[in-house]
Image (cartoon, rainbow, N blue to C red; front, side, top):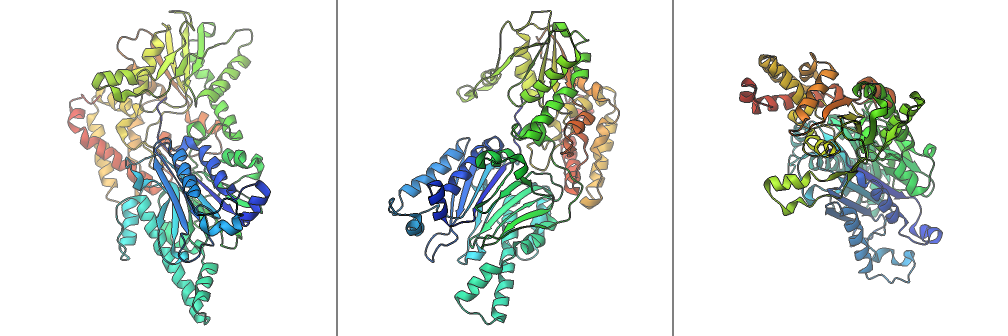
Length: 611
């Protein structure tokens, strides 16, 4: 309902055979480029603000380009970057009748390593300069570095200071730029280590270069760079000489999957995209373990290596509820289970009036949870006809730029439409399930008003996820406390009780915590919710989100934390629901977020006029 800008997507294809092998077997040397396109297009859900691709030509001769890159902004970025790549192929001097063995050195994007990135901005920073892959150039092949990542670091100033103290001069305070410089610095040191070994062996000239390229150990680079990283991440990269790596954070917050055979190694953010692109079974896909790196040398030998010790497993549960494609077999089952577990609470919300209730969902990501809810209703209520309709329709994105002010808001409110006469006016309840209710803005300004046109007796909005109460700092676009309707509801109830001083006490405690090292801090913001039940907060939300002029009664039902973990046992990370952040940086940032909130609203809180 309310689109969250979330984790980016990454993809890598590493060919393990010469290009003529793919030309002979699959009819084109562009096999790797085509597979990268499929992997990116199948992950389009993960990034619609920009996309980039890179190709490493491992056997480029001196004077030839070794890394090619395309980047574009907008929701058509995938189409644009591949169109630009193929345009450059057509404009090359290569004879189209030649085999790839003969045309290799004339063709751009004729390489062995392909990497792709899909971007959703989670920091508010936009522009082509923030679109991955990022590159660090050198006239030494082994010192060229190309990186793309799905990540957010919580401690950017700390990482910045750690490299600035060594004499480096990063261009800006951005986690992506800093990560590139940090990894590039360690790559230089690793190259120098290999250089010294080559000198000690008495090697000269090209033999030295060959020795460096054959003996680079990217695990050394990652072990030196990653201990200071606090956040959720999957970082992948390639050197100009053909070394590749993919590393997952030690808490397993961000997802990464891989597959390898004698022809190819492939990595992606989601399992089913690899299955689809390469016609594989679920059992053939491997999940990269927390703190583990997947490494491939220039000669094609591959290994996994533990870079950082695995921490308490905290895979992001929002991946299962909302972000990832629902055709993953496990995710499909889990989303149905989320819907099934809501039935008792839904029955209570409709006062048991099953025969006078119509069930529906908000398209499109809540559809699978809806199926699970309907299955459970039909199993448990024998003899009663369970009525279901597609009540809500989502239209194409409204072009609201043609209007200004209130008229712009009015146009935006018509993104959704309804199936008229789909329930009995003033008699039927209407239950509509969504995957999450975060800010509540779309509900209040659009959905509820539209649903009220059907004249239901009661509208019940059901969230298949629990109440989002805390910001996320690991990749989801949720960083301010007052973004969350659950937080605003709790604050308003505290103010109505006359407990403004309690809110100040939390502010003071957060300030005190921020004087401590991040590893010693505690999340003081959880106290905001301690005196309320989930049902009390939901009831207050319904009051706050009930638009003027809407006649139907409004009730809101949320998934419980217990229901979430029972339905999604493989992804225990729930910090945006529970406040239990897996990393010290997350705890530090939530205390900072509350301080910003309180300082921005101090006077309104004192006067009970905040909400």
